[in-house]
Structure formats: C-alpha cells, structure tokens
Image (cartoon, rainbow, N blue to C red; front, side, top):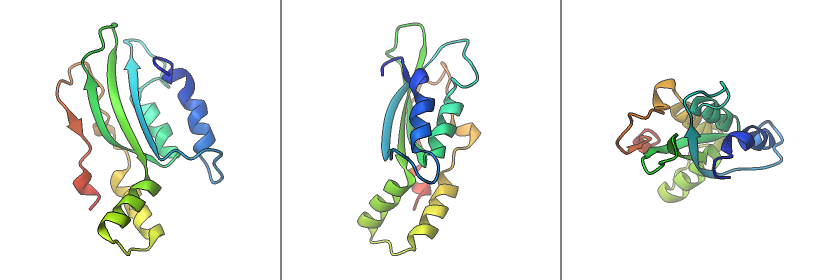
Length: 134
C-alpha cells in the first residue's frame, strides 16, 4: 500500500472497530507520508485515533529520513492491547485479571497529543516508553 495508506486506512479500521469486528489486527507496521497541505483526516493524529478504535496502541515511531520524494514520512508501529497483554502475561507470569489488566494498559498507553510528533524537524530515533507498561 505504498503511498496509498490515506486511501485505505479508514475502511480498514472500520472493519476492526466496534463490539463485533470483522477483522482483528494485532500488529501493524506502517509508513505514513505527509504532504504540506492535507485534509484533516490525513494526519497522523487522525490515523492514531482511528487505530485506537481498533484497540491498537502505538509502541514505536521514527522519522524516515530516506524519503527523497518531497514528503515527510514517519514509520509507526502499533500493537493490539490484547496481544500486548498476552505477551506480558507469558513472559512475566502475570496473574492479574485479564479485563482489569487490559483496562489499566489501555489507560497507560492511550494516545496523548504531545506523543504524535510528526515534523520534518524530527531528526532522532524515538520510541514509546515501554517501561510504562510494567
């Protein structure tokens, strides 16, 4: 879907949102291309909020400094809260109630405006602080 992410993302996330999703996404690695003038629904913030409706949380982002096509690009990595809990449970032996643990993880990992950071001036590698999960 190179350079077609903005055409596809809303429909893709509609299929995995809600109480009875048609599709489950447990991990998504995507490059978002940003031009200077974009519609309001073609921003990283809009994409991240749409992903959150599917239970996806951002755990990594970094600028793509190799894109020489006149756009700013960012690499984003998302994981489902369900899958994050399962990985945490398996590797730590966690015995917390699944629903309680997922509610707590959702609160800790919910997107916050200052964490979106999509700018041409971003020049260093950035990661979501995984230590907040533990």
